[in-house]
Amino acid sequence: MKKSLLLLGVIAALAVSAPAYSQYIYLDVNADGLPSCPTGTADALTSSVTAVDVWLNTNHDANGTVKTCNSNATQPLTMFSYDILFNASGSGSVAYTTWTNAVTGFAQVNALTTAGTAAGTSWSGPTPLTPGLYKLGTLGITVTGTPVLGFRTDNVGVEGIPTPITGFGTNCDATTYFNTYTLGIDFVDNCGTVSPTPTLDTTWGKIKALYR
Image 1: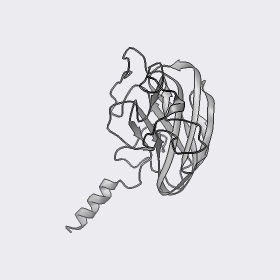
Image 2: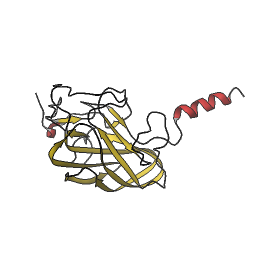
Image 3: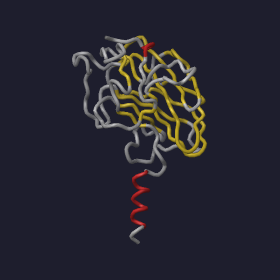
Image 4: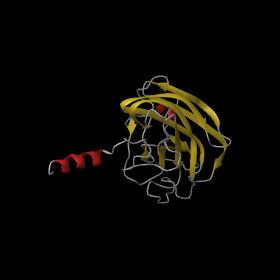
């Protein structure tokens, strides 16, 4: 049975890069329109970063594989709204300042709202957009140290943020929330900002040093 967005269950709070099998939402720091996961460093946060773009591909996964509606393959993975929840972690902090919508015709449902390390915003449009890749908007931030910015799946445990989930409204029935494709339920592929120095490279460097 479909559940209302008001009846959100408990899902993991902080989404991380996951196996590629569904739609893809990602952050872009250097404005090239591309993510840096899993091993790149181009989209790392530093004190000089003041803006981060958010991109969503409604019908391709992280590997570029075409995807169809998981509940009914004949229903298109259009987009008529989006909800985004952010979360900062790691060494340093992120102060959220502004959200600038980039989807033509979309209007604000929930303004950018912050609570601790989290933030969220929601927007909607009058007409479903065709399946594909969209720049949703740009998040204005102030960075201290070298934190990592990613997506929350839902607002459970966060007081004062009305945006309920990370996901998008679509003509596809979806799985749990009616016509709402939700991160952590209908898709998992996502990519936040990355560490300036990949963990794998750092670890390998230490190993090599032992044999010098």
